[in-house]
Amino acid sequence: MQTQTPYSPTIARDIASEMADHALERGEGLTFKDYKRLGFTEAQIQRHSDAAAAIFARRSLRRVA
Image (tube, rainbow, N blue to C red):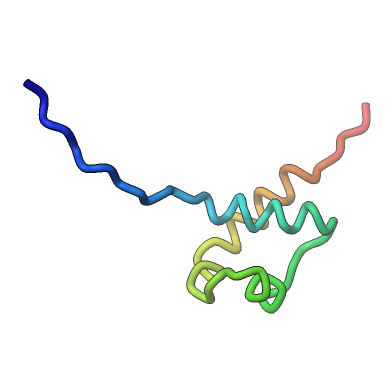
């Protein structure tokens, strides 16, 4: 007989990717104030801003053949 594990409603978020998505939608990098308006906390912004910038740069890079 198997025991059931309790359901965990926690959803893992990729905050850096979410931040990069917002910047890509706008077409430019966002400021600290912009991210605060979007609902990110100061801790999230400080922790994930470098990764978000790298994701933004990688996704917005357009190569010409």
